[in-house]
Length: 158
Image 1: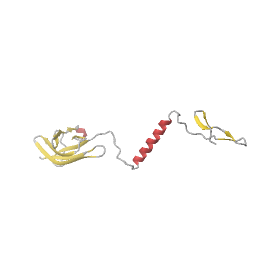
Image 2 (image 1 turned 120 degrees about the horizontal axis):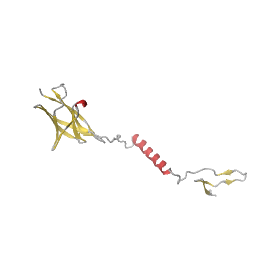
Image 3 (image 1 turned 90 degrees about the vertical axis):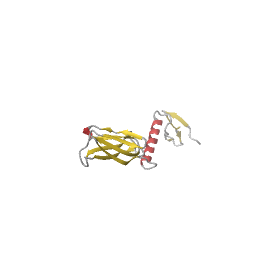
């Protein structure tokens, strides 16, 4: 004989049935589908399961942040091993692409940054006070999320 169901206190349960000895059976409760927030709990549990599965290597990718990066970070020095030059003009070329790299403030180490989120093979030119130097073949790559910054030091000739 199937269990008759009755609705009690916002949950479904089998209707209590008395057996011949006066005992009541069928008090098991089943989770309701109309409980407020039940769908949110199920969705959260599913999202957590997927996140753990992904982190464990099921098609895992590196965790990506919202940060973006410069592809080139260039330091210009006064000769090999000399102090940083903070008043240089630094340009980067990749085919027809040409960019003048932005200087940072001297307190941050006098670097020049650019090629924002742009992979490529660059030729970098640095000039200051009539002196010039060039570095060719600087390769900037990308990861699954962003550009992998490439640090380059360019010594100016004496």
